[in-house]
Length: 226
Image (tube, rainbow, N blue to C red; front, side, top):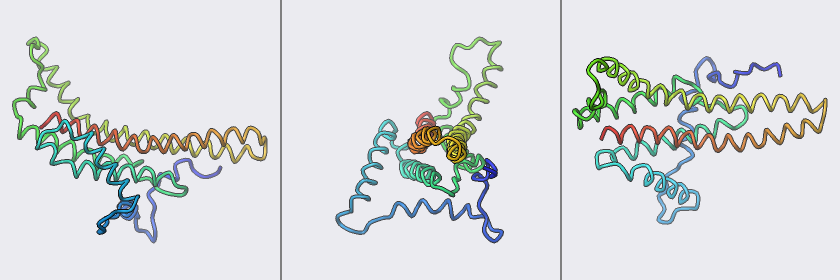
């Protein structure tokens, strides 16, 4: 109980060297490639899930948008596996760091916007000024649409950070309360532990849903610009 509430969000360090790079690269080991003619059940399940997600996300895209399929599938696998690994005890979740999430959101958003300005310049510029806008409102609407455009990657990063961080904090608080209640009231501690177990199951769902939402929003930004 004396442990700092935000200790689990501190970047791990060994011998003075940050381990973020190793933690970030570790999820890639969970998705091995098979050289066999017939895959095992795990790889077959992974391939089925990837095909399902890619079909659902990329079916509405044109040919230029579908060139992003590999990148978006890699993104959802990375975020999902990182979130799930972060639920393990004494582990570190890189997606709780706003700087990392901004590092993923800004380049993808910028790539989608630049693609839009290259391929559909007139349509991209038309988003800043809706048709039929009264003349006195033109400067204000251009400013508002510009702000809304630049706030998209920030919203992506903050949404992912807030959801993952809130779940970790709730698990930490309820877990600490359960340990404290064990010596006071066993019945109350059992009820609290049941809540903790249900919350942990919910966090597993949130970890996968947030990976899907992040990738889906990037896909929608790409769809609007291709």
